[in-house]
Image (cartoon, rainbow, N blue to C red; front, side, top):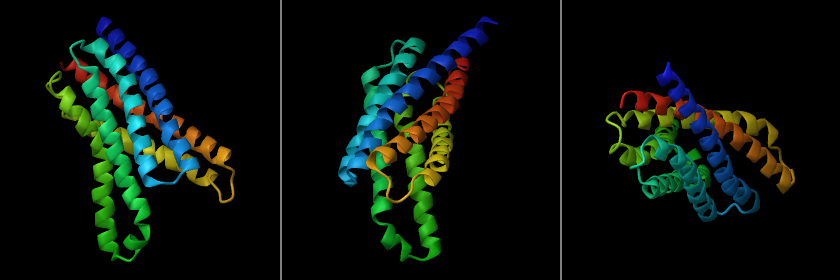
Length: 201
């Protein structure tokens, strides 16, 4: 019974901190995208997003294992987020070139780019977690699932709401709403995965 209570408290704490961290971090690229469409700016904003998310997650992870180095976790998360944003920006700003390719080639590029984005964060964080959990490789796949679900929620919410001619404030507000729901979705899935990791430890 005590184990279940500890697991429940961990899951709730992770959900709160991770949702808040990702939501706060996502405000940077959301506002940057509304004010400036430069890919370099958005990639840097993505690094900030990752750093804020990593800092929030480190608060909970340090409670689970005080030997975990928060700086390494934050750095890995920040770099992975920047990498994911860079891949996304490459796809966006080369859209016309991609449309000129055969459908099979476009699907192949999309599969490779999508996999790189979804696996980036979990893989980077695995390099830190592997020193603390014997089954840390599961974190990679849990994060891919979590971010895949979160991005689907973001697209499902924002796509019908974003319309041509909207004000910068409204565009940013819609992005913030989508970011909050994306963060909560991702936090829920990764929280369940973290609970399993700690139980098998």
